[in-house]
Amino acid sequence: MDQKPTTLNELFNQAVDRYRESEFLRFKSGDGWRSLTYGEVARRVRELALGLHSLGLSPSDRVAIWSENRPEWNLADLATLAISAVDVPIYATQARSQVEYILADSAARAVFVSRAFLDDALAMKSQLPELEFVISFEAAETQATTSVVAISELVDKGRAAYGERPSLYDSLWHKATADDLATILYTSGSTGDPKGVMLTHKNLTANALNSAHWLELGNRHELALTYLPFTHIFERAVWYLYAHTGNTIAYAESIDTVARNLLEIRPTAMTSVPRMFEKIYARIIERGLAAGFPKRQIFLWSLDVGRRWAERKDRGETIGPLLAIQHKIADALVFKKWREAVGGNIRIFISGGAPLAPEIAYLFMAAGLQILQGYGLTETSPSVSCNTETRNRIGTVGPVMDGVKVRIAEDGEILVKGDTVMKGYYNRPAENEEAFTADGWFRTGDIGHLDPDGFLVITDRKKDLIKTSGGKYIAPQRVESLIKSSRFVSQVVVVGNARKFASALIVPNMELLRSYAEMKDIHYKDLGELLTRPRIVDLFERQIDKYTSDLARFEKVKKFALLEEELTTESGELTPTLKPRRSVIEKKYAPVIDHLYEEHAPTVAAV
Image 1 (cartoon, rainbow, N blue to C red):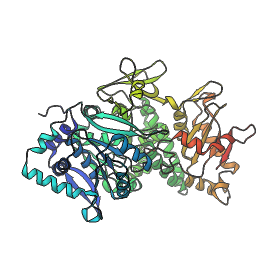
Image 2 (image 1 turned 30 degrees about the vertical axis):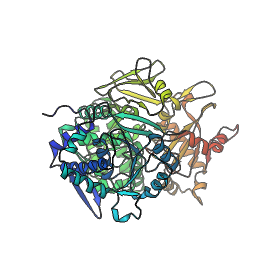
Image 3 (image 1 turned 90 degrees about the horizontal axis):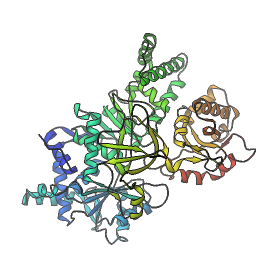
Image 4 (image 1 turned 135 degrees about the vertical axis):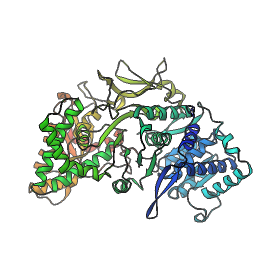
């Protein structure tokens, strides 16, 4: 029986020993899907690791990875770890100035790049004396410069090295220890330079072991679809988890092809952020409401039944015979199609990164698509808590996982201890001191509490709390989550710091809004005019009132602005994991926000 792994190298190689002939990675190549077994991946990692060694890269050297998701990303990660080097992932969407900062701050000696970033990497290399090697994922013949090392060249070197010294690879990967640095992950903050989080082999290995035990993933084989960037700790940690438990990982071609790839792959599990569930939900609602009589009425009836059924199930209440029969009918008429739209085989979705609107969670549950919300940070590798199939409570991020300790400070901040907590911030001694309490607990910066049954509830980010001019504190994420329950709302950002009351910037679900306007015979020349129509303004007022009815008076949104343009990562308004960068958004829309707080301004301003 395998000993419990203490490094990522041990975790990966033990998995290879157990599942050598099983399918590991599935990816699109040309018009079809190809696969690699655990054994084939191990051979490629060995060749690439020995190739890196042949370049003279040594333990503790920094190796950056700048690419979109693809199998080579993970091969480069494992190969880097195998020689006890430290990898430094870079987002494909990262601003060039930030990329240069990361490469310089980490003193990276090498960088793996895909074709999209090759020219930029070469330009940066000339400015960064520490950066010696630019390694391209593309074939050698595509390169017209000797400044580039093609990955195929490295593989050839590694294959030759293995032929000469068959024991070299094993001796290299065994050298890594639990306390060795595995990666530096630069968090995408909304202001200032990115901050490097140092995670050790112990941190990431403990996270995989904790999660496998908590979610009971070793009990069945999963086919998982992956689309979130591996640069983010959430998806990368899940990749290690799936590898450890012998599952198959399929790579979505891109974020834009997820819907199609779900139908092609028909996965049993998928990790996601709430924004993806919001888009799926909005698309389903839009199609249901666009159907003619009587399909639209059947659809709306089914949603009502599903919501009531899911709420009772979530609270652990008895579902009466009438509601049970109604739910079976609704499932046959409507919800069965939801499952088919995501491939028909999904057993669990795991959601993290931001709050999920309860309305969406209830209706997915009603459709037999359980969304397990979890909580974590880059600094905690990441998992702190997570709902499970047998213990799932909507509106929470689940019980605290085994192997992790949580304490709630007097001001409500969540404090964490355990093997998954980071080594510290790279080159940031002052911030390291601030990050921990005197007795060694990590300060998460999140506000929350444990309910009577031990489920963790996140209220908001400490730094995001809005303090009104009257001295009241408002948790914007909570308010935003409630407003996003409306099918007419695509995105929302609550503002109001040092103001008399809270306001909201809302991006409507434009397709659904157009359908509503057509149904209600509302005429308009363009989108801007539609958003100012009194009946549209009234619609959003009613939706906000409906979904925030349980809030205290001071928490409620008094005024709002309807925005024509969606918030995007390209514009810098969203992080790579689709969370709002509040400072960027508030700066861009400052005139709109100011107008909302003018003495006699209307309730809504359209932009």
